[in-house]
Amino acid sequence: MSLKSWRELPTGGVILEAGNAAEYKTGSWRAFKPVWIEERCIQCLFCWLYCPEPAVKVVDGKMQGFDYDYCKGCGICAKECPEKAHAIEMVPEF
Image (cartoon, rainbow, N blue to C red; front, side, top):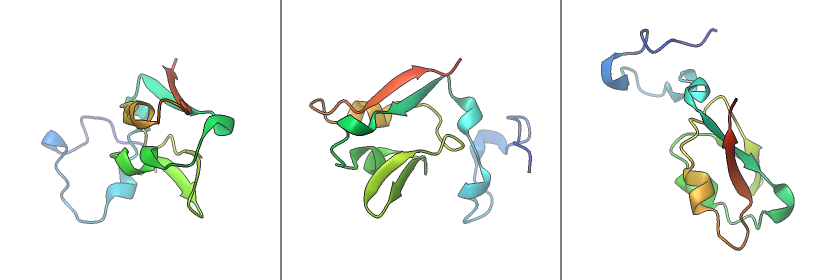
């Protein structure tokens, strides 16, 4: 399945069908991407809690990284990461 361009999406990004979030891979929209620094992570999962997309991968209650197919690069994960850990940094995509 190829990614939809913005012209192929419904006006205003309206969701027309329930349960179709997995089809909307929005990773190509971002200019910055989060980079996870595993050794600094304290596994608080604030990044997962605040992420508006299913972009934070958690397995058995532990952060495992990001699914960049769904990350729009909003930076909320890096902002909410506790300052003492600073385990997520935003870097330019290109």
